[in-house]
Length: 190
Ligand SMILES: CC(C)(COP(=O)(O)OP(=O)(O)OC[C@H]1O[C@@H](n2cnc3c(N)ncnc32)[C@H](O)[C@@H]1OP(=O)(O)O)[C@@H](O)C(=O)NCCC(=O)NCCS
Image 1 (tube, rainbow, N blue to C red):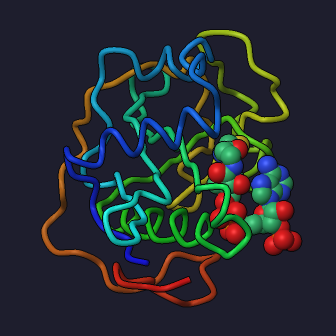
Image 2: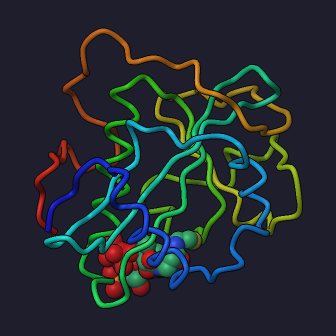
């Protein structure tokens, strides 16, 4: 199993995985309003592959809060049913969050199950001042600060955004808090 950057020829495998995980009608969800007409953050789209088979996918979309604070929207993430509970989802999340942090991103938002995402540091308490462009179960609207305090005093509507966060000079090689002190490299095997 390898974690590698998503390539165009992974698209069909990713769609199949997402159809199985979320259903073909997944685009009606509120988070898709934040993705419509916007490309995912290329540097943060990864697949887990076994041979040619895509067995895991994670993507992030660029958003802004109140048109000012840039943030990432995590998702979708999916792991093939026969590979679940082997740690692959956790590896995809930690690996991509490490990369996001190293690239200078400060805030990550998502809509998902708190019992799963809280182990990565996501919390509803970080999104209390934020709104989404449609209905969601607010208990599932979660945030993570990659830089402590990045969400302090940040309030307003989350909107789609074309990224302006560039790659800073050099990549930081220290560690994201909450990853157990490990920097996970691309060829990790869960
Ligand atoms: C969520 C998902 C990506 C996790 O992938 P994974 O490789 O199985 O994750 P991990 O192996 O790192 O973690 C598995 C653990 O998380 C738990 N878990 C998985 N999904 C969970 C959820 N929605 N809520 C709470 N716990 C969850 C599992 O029960 C398992 O617990 P265990 O370690 O005590 O057995 C995968 O289950 C999946 O693709 N689900 C369908 C799509 C989906 O729901 N995506 C996320 C949107 S909220």
